[in-house]
Image (cartoon, rainbow, N blue to C red; front, side, top):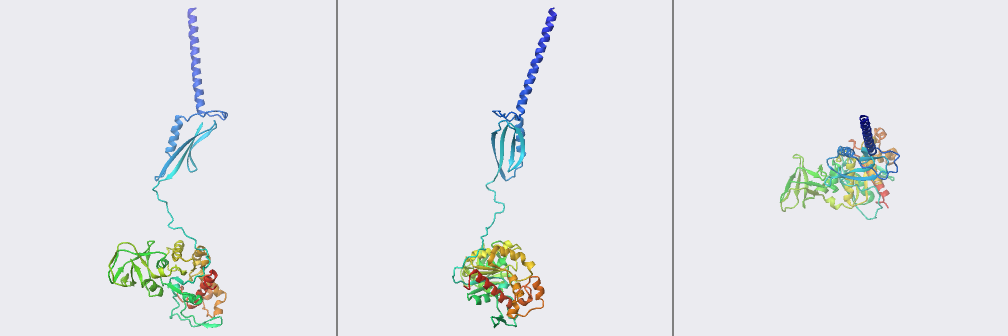
Length: 443
C-alpha cells in the first residue's frame, strides 16, 4: 500500500511538472508573438513597441550600404512617429528614391540630405548673363554720328575703280552715277549724318569686336623702347583667342591703328609680312616701358565713337568658333560698350537661303526688329522688279541664283561674296529705310 501511494505521488508530481513546463513554453511563445507581430485589429493600442536589436542592426546595415558622392557631406535626421498600432515602414531616402523599408510598430523617418561642401565650386557657372537688346527704344532726337563696323562687306570691296559700273541708275527720273558707292557712303548721303566706315577686309568677328572696344585685346612680355619700335609676336583677345588685325591701309584700319596706345604710349601698329610679326612704333620719344603683364591695345575709335548709332555686319570671316551664341555675345559686347541703344544688325549677302538660314534666324531671334536680313532683302528687291525700276542690266545666271535665294550677279562682283556698287547702293538704301522705321532719322 505504501509503495502504491508513493508511486501515485511520484506520477502526480511528474504530471504537475509537465504542466508547469507547458505553461512556461506557452507563455514564452505568446510573449515572443506579441513582440514580433502587429495585428490589423490592434487599432486601440496606446503605446508602440520599440525596434528590436535585430531590426536596428538591419537598419544600420542598410544605411551603410547607401553610396554617397565623395564631395558631399551627409546630414541624418531621425524623427520617431507614433503609428497607433498600424503597420508602418522605416524608409531611408535620397531625394524621393526609397532605399530600404523595415516594418515596425514605430516609424523612425530617416532622411539623408545632401549638403554641398562649402568649398565646392559651381559646375559650369555662366560667365555673363545676356542682357536683352531686342527691344526698340524710342529715339531721343539727339544728333548723332553713325559708325559702321564690319569686314570687307562694310569696307566696300567690289566698289573699287577696277570694278566699274558702266550704266547709271535712274533714281526718281534722274540718271545717277553710283560708281564707288559703298553702304556707309550711301547711308551718309541719305541721312546727311557723319558716317564712319570701320570696315576692314578679311577680319573676323573677334578682331572687329576688339577694334571697337567691346572685347579687349592685349600684348604681353614686350619692352617698348625709349624711341623707335618693338616687335610683337601675337595679340590676344580677352577670351584667350588670337586677334588678327588686317593692316591693309584701309580707312577703318588706319583709323584704329595709326594712333593706338599701349600702356599709355601712343604709336602706330603695322605688320611685317616677311617676318610675320606686328610692329609698334611709338610716336614720340620718352621712357622705356617694360610690360610683363597683359596690357591693352586701345584704338582711337573705341573712345571717340562711343555713343554713335551702330551699324554692324560681321562674321563672314569666322571668329566665333562656329557657334552663333558666341557670335551674338560678340555683338552684345559691342552694343553694351557703345553705350548707345540705337543700332542695326545687318545680315550677310552671300550664298543661298538654305546655307544662311540658321545664321539669319539666330540674329533675328536675338535682335528682333533691329536685324535686317540683307540677303533676303536684295533677293526680294530683284524679284519685285527693282532692277527694271533702276535700269540695272540683268545677268544670265540671275534666275538660277534667285531660285535658291541667292543674291544675283547683277548686284555682285564675280567672287560670290562681295556686292558691286549697285548692290552697295541698294544696301545703303535698305539700312536707311530700317533706320526710318526705328526712328533714327528721316523724321
